[in-house]
Length: 310
Image 1 (spheres, one colour):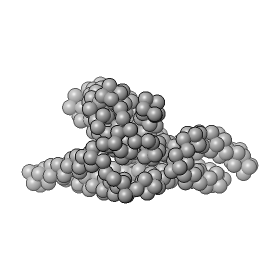
Image 2 (tube, helix red, strand yellow; image 1 turned 120 degrees about the vertical axis):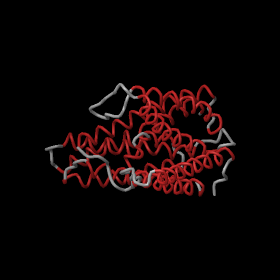
Image 3 (tube, helix red, strand yellow; image 1 turned 45 degrees about the vertical axis):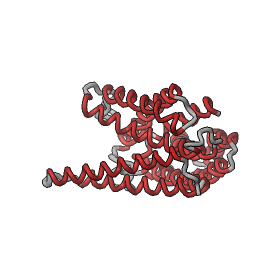
Image 4 (cartoon, one colour; image 1 turned 30 degrees about the vertical axis):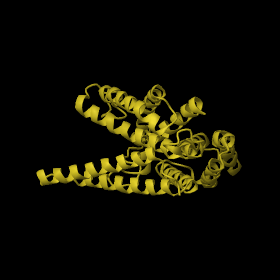
């Protein structure tokens, strides 16, 4: 079992407290306006309870179980990504090797081999997959299929594996431990999504990229980034080795990176003319709908933290 450091335990309690508040608010809304349909809100909150519950149990178990959990998350994300994109039937063997890359990548994470962790997918998998596709002998659609498979593995496996690697870094904040790093990036990324949504609803007037995401506004983006930057500044010394000023930079990266991750996956959905990437999470859609921001914030935060503190 992980020993829960006090600051990480407090952060978990704070998240559970927010979920309790959200559940109470939904009940009050249903009581005050019984004629209004709150089914989607109920599904979203219930899904959050399940997601947070599973995550906290896994993180509280031990490091290897937590790393395996993120590996399984990569598997689900890659499977979902490939299910919505067109991959040639001839490439099923190359797709098999893309899945094989998942346990290998997370094995490098589990043994703390930073050198292999950082180059395995961008170098070895990147070079191997097209070679395997060439051996099939089918050239029609080769470039599109290779690009699709490369991008899918980079986003769903390489990006997410950065969260798992945080658990293997030396502990430099004993009050938060390795869990603090994971809780920081997960909570700040999700809170950034909420902040940009709320600011956009309150003050949103000027759209940023209406053809991609009509609800994204400059007011929501600036308000959300400003809020999360300030919150990260205060939270960083509690959960990470970063100082207040370093936490501000981390918050800025998370705010901007989260926005980019969100609109990139939105662009994919617009191109494919679908609303959600899946139906696995009631009220939220698919795995990619829920972790789209993390696909960018996780590697950005990891490498900033690694450069500054390690």
